[in-house]
Structure formats: structure tokens, C-alpha cells
Amino acid sequence: LKTGVRERNAAMCNNDLMADVTFVVSSSSSSPVTFPAHKYVLATGSSVFFAMFYGTLAEQGSQVVVPDVEPDAFLKMLKYLYADEIDLDEESVLPTLHVAKKYIIPHLAKSCVQYMEASLTARNACVLLC
Amino acid sequence: LKTGVRERNAAMCNNDLMADVTFVVSSSSSSPVTFPAHKYVLATGSSVFFAMFYGTLAEQGSQVVVPDVEPDAFLKMLKYLYADEIDLDEESVLPTLHVAKKYIIPHLAKSCVQYMEASLTARNACVLLC
Image (tube, rainbow over all chains, first blue to last red; front, side, top):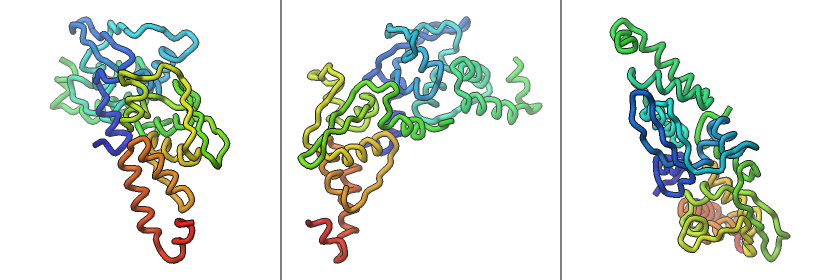
């Protein structure tokens, strides 16, 4: 039993149940991955998604193709929007910052930058740069 | 800026923005009051709403008439579903328990019962029982 709003939303993340939109996400280095989602959740957390789904020029279709985002980073963005979850690592922080900026999600973008600041040590500078 | 899932949902409670359903709520002692709502939020928190909006017999319309619920109690139920907010008082606790049981929202119903138990003192027994 999910007793809180966050827990109930978290259970819906990347879940077909009640989904009213599907994202087909790929990047130059990743094959397309499909993510079901709920327009309401995305739109409450991102003005870009709000405009996409509820704006005057909103698309009516139920599939959105995203050709320039790492699927891993897209899922991290979903987890943040559904569950306040921010789980970054060296490999994902830049793609996640990219997706956070693309969809204008300032708190997630800020977390990415803070993570990068904290990570910019000699030990892992290599990971960020390679 | 709403940084958490709960805060973002709370801002949508009783808010026309993106609403895809309207409840017209009245009781024998109250005139009808209209509440905009979002099917996704209600369905994640109540199996009755899930069946109503996403089940095999789901209604397609966007208006739901509720002729047997106190509007005040309906709003308290919405606040719980959108924001984890439980704000009971002697006057509203019984109608809220009624609406929590009607829509099968166990945590809210349990809170109502606990509130009533704690309130059963000599001073307010009269208010609860009358």
C-alpha cells in the first residue's frame, strides 16, 4: 500500500498503467528505448512538457520521438519527476544535465552541476573527460 | 518553484489547470460545488477512481456527479490525494470518513477513526454524536 503522494507516483514511473504518452528516446550512441509516461506528471514538473501537452500548440499524438537524449538520462529525469529521486554518477551526470536543461527542470539541473562540482577532483576528472 | 513531487501535486489540487474531470458534489444539506480534478492523481490513490476512469467500464465523460457527499469533505479527500494533507476537525471528520470509505482510501479512513477516538472526550462527545 502506497500511503504518500511520492510513493504512489514513484510506482507509476516507467509504468504502462494509465500511461497516456510514449517516448521513443535515442541518441547518437544509443538505440531507441521506449518509455511510457503520464502527461500530468511531466507537465507538473516541466514547463516544456506542459507546453508540449497542454499548450495552445500541443501535439495530439500519443508518441513523442526524442532523438537527442541518452535513454539512461531520460529515465533519470523521469525518476526525478515521479519520485524526487536523484541518483547521479560520473557517467550519467552530463547527459542528465542536458536533459534537465532541455526540459527546463532547474532543480535537477542544479543537482547535476553540484554533483559535477563535487566530483571535479583529480581522481575522477579523468572519468568526466574521457 | 515547486521542487518536490508533493509540492507540485499540491499546487494542482482543486486547480483547473490540466484538469480532465469535474466533480459536481452535493449533499442533502449542501448546494452543489464544482471541483476540477486530474484522473491520474485520483486513480493512483483510490481503486474506486481507478476503476471509474481507467477500468473496463470506465466512463468517458468529463463530469462526475456526486450527490451524497459533503463538498467540504470531498475537498479534504482531494487534499489528501494531492498533498498527503490530513486536516480534520470535529465537524468534518464524519463526512470525511464517509468519503474515504466511499472511494476506498484506507489511510485517510484510518486517520478519521483515530481522530474520532482521540476526540471522544466528555467535552466534544456531544458534537460528535449530535
